[in-house]
Length: 202
Image (spheres, rainbow, N blue to C red):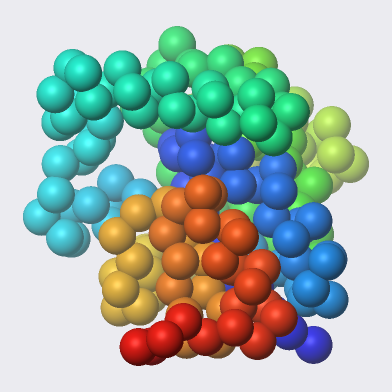
């Protein structure tokens, strides 16, 4: 079966927007989604870029970027509230996802994205994380405890190192075969690639 890799960090508003659409894109193409968390800040550091690219933009571009994310939310018909805690500390939430097998990741992923980008909840608060996991039928206390496990910590580092090795430079990024597409506004390209399209010159 065709596979669509979805590289994400909960810190990205555009990754949130992508998360609301990616499963429908895959379903229309008869593909499965592989959820691949990584630490966006560590990726930026490895590439020598700013920790928070939004803050490095000139004020006019920052305003446009914020306007654009709300336009896309309206276009997709999904809620969006810019969080009061930004940048978001997502280390624990990413480690929680990594403790789950592939088939179990989607419900928690959606709950965490919604908590951060709609409900303005703190993804660095253990009690909040436990509650979010419990809301989708998972043992939140066990998952939060697992975020302190050295093996889980190593998993997130390895996932981020793999993202760097593959050539990622932001989130969301999608992979179809050996083709990488960056940005939730590239989902039309992703869907076409899942149907066998390969751009000229690639």
